[in-house]
Image 1 (tube, rainbow, N blue to C red):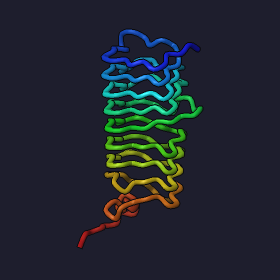
Image 2 (tube, rainbow, N blue to C red):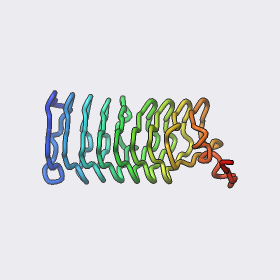
Image 3 (spheres, one colour):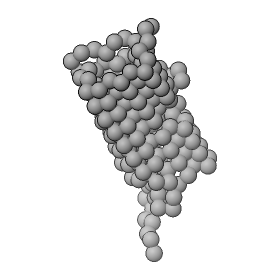
Length: 190
């Protein structure tokens, strides 16, 4: 596989033209439109994707190794088909609505100031992940490792502690309601 190293791509429209089938290393992509593009079998290493649209991209065997997504729109994306090898991502100010992370290793992943509405986390390793100021409305957490995961500033989540490992997970007293939802308790601030 060929390499493209340390390049900045700006205002590219990958919906019309295909990306080169290479490994992108230490590259940045700013204001790019990847929507519905086929990024399968590409490798991104130590890259930043900024203010870009990745909605409905195809990611079969795509490799993300230490990739930061900042101010991106990433709607309806199936991250579960990405390459597992050294998978490492972080999201800041992103919209990840209707995406899926089934069976991905997301340990220590940062989700900061992001919307994760209707996102599916199934059998993921989210240990020590941080959901900082992120909205998890209708996100589904099933059979995950949530040990040491930080939900202290997350909002709108519902998690069944009996269906997930949660040793030393962090919550604020204002978010505990999301852990008790299935019991239909009425929690009031008196």
